[in-house]
Image (tube, rainbow, N blue to C red):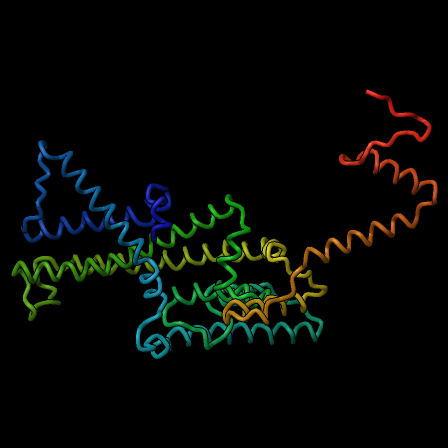
Length: 367
């Protein structure tokens, strides 16, 4: 948390946390003061406008900091990580969607294989249908049915979280934190900007649900709504919860689309900078793609189980030095005796700590 405090005055914090918090504070004022006539300590008079504006900004900033603190929990809640393993019990809708997309893809595969076997051209509509199903399967769902979560937002996250494991064998959880060490700052800024848009819509979704709860709690406290008429459409202000629910649905849709866009940046980071991570970790270069994949799988096991036995072999400095010396001796062997003497004389002449010799026939001068 304290590592995030210097970012409070950056653009991404303002977009992702401060703006949703300010909107929630303004809606809370309208509900408490304008709708139910309760006192909120704000008069919005000309004499106290600047003071109250500063108070509004301070409360909004505090709300933004709170959203930053609870961000991980809110994101996981929208993903479908619910207590008592409830997410795995109510994911039947997303399972149905996943199976439907997979069946459409397999049907298109069979039709295209039959046409290719008979030497016929593949129609554009069939090709487009296959492209669409494959893109949706890759961007909206993980690669295995057992990984399906109960929300479309969560499965969009799972789709790009499983990408590095499927493509390269490296697990996204231990791999991402280490990959950030080799990703250039300019590229990280692009990733952070995309993530800020995700957090903005996630916070709007969460606060929209909070507005519904807030409305009914304030209405009951003010004595304007009773429990018997809690969901009555004939109340004085029946459209506030409905508008908040509509706002939640719109924000949730935008959050899912923003997550897919952010996922593209994450996948691109693995595509572009995974070789740099391997070099940074000093792993011995793999000769084949299969060997490279096995190295990353072993790396996953090593860091997740904290067991150094599974860590891939690293390039040792002494090995590199020995290789350099061996190469040097091989090159020296190619020289004749005269060339070796000249090279040795040049090395001795340029060596800083080489002693100065005098000719044998020159006598030393007395002081």
